[in-house]
Length: 116
Image 1: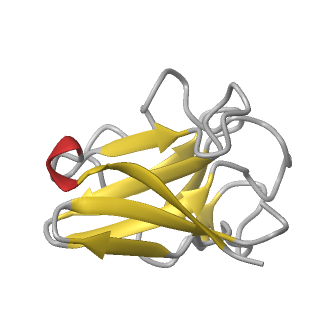
Image 2: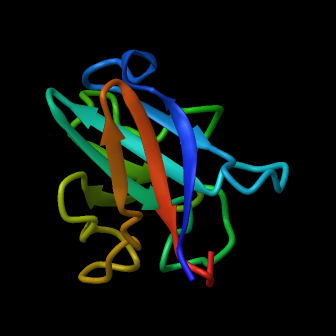
């Protein structure tokens, strides 16, 4: 069964930036969202190389220096923002798990499956 959970207002996601969310109130960010212009990409904050390890090196810091890749700061794996595929690192070829989003007017919601 899917749940729709409010994450934030669209204006709270700056273009070219990432942000982590704790939609299930577990005490740690489990979803990360990257905004690229009008496009939003959401992924589970869970590296395929080391499941359960937080990917950000500090709150909301999921991107490399130039903002072109998502980085798992635990071991340096780099992921394509749009596809979630690992392009460099120990899990090359594997991918992050996409989190579907709904955008209503200026509100952003995550669609979480029963497994989340």
